[in-house]
Amino acid sequence: MPATVRTAKKLLLGREIAHMIETAGASQAEAAKLIETSQPRMASLISGGSNIAPGDLVLLATKLGFTDEGYQEALRELRRDNHKRGFWTTGHNRAYSEDIRLRVDLDKHADQLRGVEVEVAPGLLQCESYVRALHADMPEINGVTLDDRIAARLARQDILAKDEPPLLQFVLSESCVRRVWGDAGVMLEQVEHMIELSNRPNVHIQVMPFDQPAGRRSPIASPFTLIRVPSPGAAGPLELAYVEGEAEIRYLDDRKALRAYETAWARLSNAALKFDETRDFLRGVADDYRAAA
View 1 (cartoon, rainbow, N blue to C red):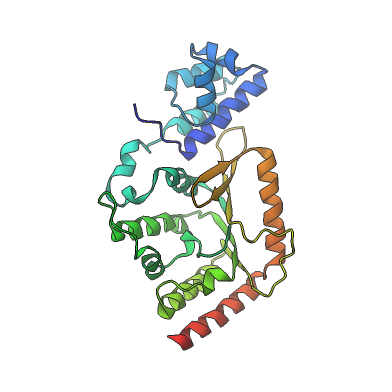
View 2: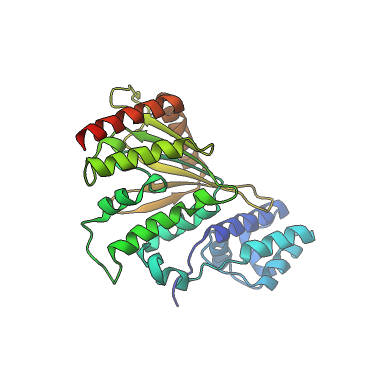
């Protein structure tokens, strides 16, 4: 059988299950017996790697002492997840690789995204011509065309048009706006696009200029994103650090890793230019590209 697709809702439901077990003072093995399953499967439910039937979910909650109807409905709502495997195999959704699909779903449910970027403008801030230049030399693979890749990237930006869009905060190395993709005309459009977005109340952009002393303890060389997804339950928001390398993507939720990345974020956001200073800096970069174009 194909592996279960991990989604934001499944991760949130897993947190709620873990919260119920911990609050009840039970072990995973003891909780598993309540619904006649195994401890490994219970662990998989907690990590978002398995599905649970509605009846078993309500039974588990009830036997662990969580009988409030409102809370049980919140659990049922988290279980209602329409991101089946087939969702990713049609249209431009085919352009999302297996390991990026969870990130796409997390973005849709997040209320806060804080990202540090080094060489490339953040995907949520990219204009169409910049996206095209980024992917121009990628070959067609399994029927996924350049237009599919562009559509997939731009579709992720739909979260900006939500009635209650997430808070987006970015610290960007100056190289994100100096590294030329396409030509000066493309870069001018991209920088102006970022300036326009930065005027939105929920989009905060800070640049770390090359001549700004970041400090040895401010890791501007390592891109990462801190993701927060609110929960309708009692376990609190889901918080993850997303780290993308050359050969792997990691989703980190252990407290030690999160503290390290929170500390890195605090140092970088304090060392970078403030919002108004960043907007002025970007206007200067746009003028450079305007002259070159």
